[in-house]
Amino acid sequence: MCTLLMQPRNKRRLLLFGSWGLVVLCMAVIFLLSHEPASASQSRSDGVIAALFARFGVELSSHFVRKAAHALEYCGLALLLYGAYFVSFRTPQPTLSWLTAALYATSDEVHQFFIPGRACQLRDVFIDSLGAAAGILFCTILFLILRRKLRKSEV
Image (tube, rainbow, N blue to C red; front, top):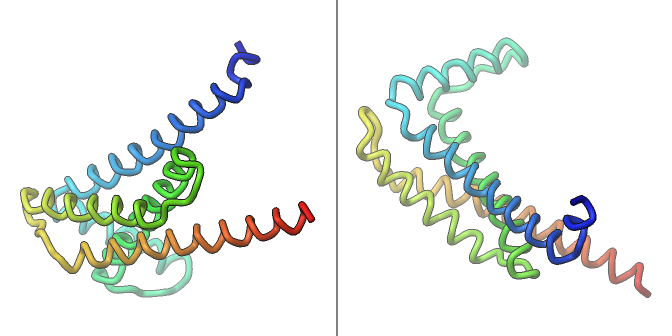
């Protein structure tokens, strides 16, 4: 069984399923978090604020924590999308990764329109898209550095 998994074709399948599985898992977590009513979401933000204050003595506004969470969750999604598209196409797809994350951010905001106390805000789509762009920029820089090192080692 192990030798069967180690064949190049099966390794690729495993990478494909694994990378896209992580993307779907991340999207599901984002969906579940945005499906919470405003009161539950606020309570979660208050918990993060209290933990940051207890740990570092830093007091942050709820607004800042919530927007930072938006950016970070979409940065993570973009990182996973970048990897999944790289495995799928065998070349980086930064534009496609960003578009997918931005479209998901848009659909997530529309979803929040139907959740009690939540709203559909274009500003949040912008923040989410910026977070995704930051993740993709990080991946692109890392890819270029690694490619450059590989080319130098071949010479």
